[in-house]
Length: 105
Image (cartoon, rainbow, N blue to C red; front, side, top):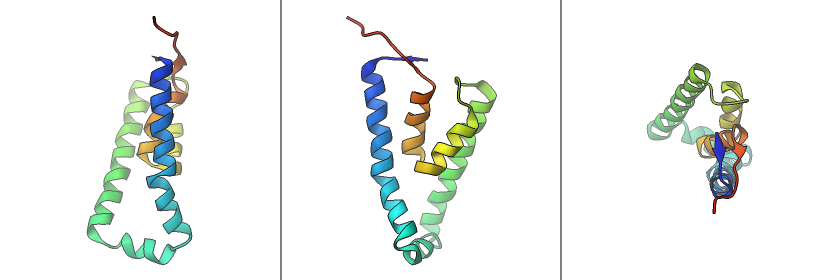
């Protein structure tokens, strides 16, 4: 897939936001306030959102494995998802599997 420079910049921005925004909060509580993290995941709403994200990750990984999307396969997507969540992994994966496009006039 070929992406324009604007599309690449937008995806890079969203990936950076995903890593530095929601994922940074998650990592802080997981590392520094781990007692609050484990208390939070026992809450039914938080647990349902966590399960929902893992199911979404599995479905997207299946789609990538089934239909292929470029050089990097489903394992790369799952690794990115576990590293930084879906807001990070989806745009990062698209960037990894894209080619630089020409500037259109």
